[in-house]
Length: 132
Image 1 (cartoon, rainbow, N blue to C red):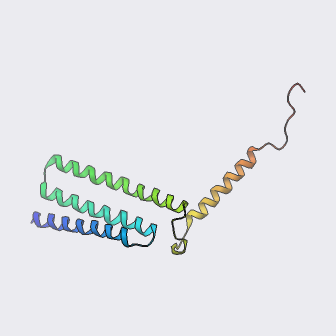
Image 2 (cartoon, rainbow, N blue to C red):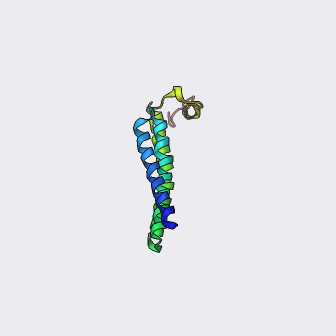
Image 3 (cartoon, rainbow, N blue to C red):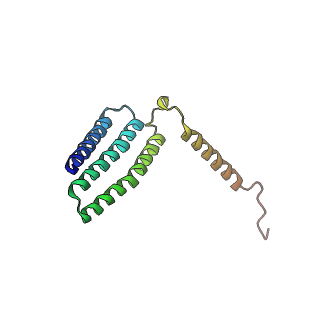
């Protein structure tokens, strides 16, 4: 029974990883590709780790599989977030496909705040130098 469950997890994980790879080549824009690069790929890897854990069932191997799964779950969202922000800033995101664009509003507010800080930093009247 455990072997059948392990096989189902391994096959499901393989299918999700394959679907993620196909999505990377077939989806039209950056954000869609980022979605397929993270969600199905991570779930596919986790299913494969569960399948391996069920099949192998050894203590040191289980701890290594848990570490791999944790590392993937911690790094994949950060990677996707940073690549998506870089793509947005360089103009690779199609704005016509966005339903809500909060990043533009946040960037404009940050630029306005930075402009106000620069204006406050410039002195209005210069004081005469001492000794003149």
